[in-house]
Length: 289
Image (cartoon, rainbow, N blue to C red; front, side, top):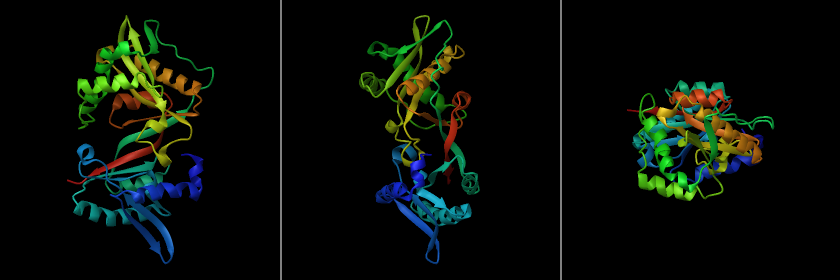
């Protein structure tokens, strides 16, 4: 977490922004004139998340984690009464007591946010001799269309079972045509025997809509996307692409590099933890049937 948020003046705007959301609802727990905890929920797109509530990183805190359970009991009564039954909360990975309080409310881990330091000057990319890592160009659009569909198709399967829709070819082409010439993206591809088999994208973490406020490390780059064709796995392309994004982040002047992934994406879990990424926030989820 950015040390700047240890100062109340820095955290106040984060809380005010949540309360300004037209979907916001909030509760405080007080004893006398002393506030011992608070909870704020906001809603995101029903089309993507179903009838939902999100407790963002700055949306909950308590002197005693048990207070969060009491606050949630009051909040959930209203939310479920409104038909909002998909509940999400972002919890600091280092706060075991707070995490335990949410787990004892029948929340389970769904998603991880993680970060690591930018690598030292001696760190470099050493792919296998048959692999080439290079910048992507507009000439790579056709293979990139296939690679842009690899991750969402993979996440739709077991054990993730994501329900997020896979973009159409036309939507992917339009996005690629814009992003490949946009300087804020560092677009890489991996080639094997003249064929593009993998891709990775680096950018500033400020581009990510999932990392805002408290869960955004200071001066951080972002490993935004990585995918390798299923038939090309085992060649080391994924690791080489990840290392290349680490090198880019260092050379671009970032102190940190962040990424995030679904906890049940076993391949991503092994890859990113194996590259030194450490969990910073856990997204927990509860679905009330």
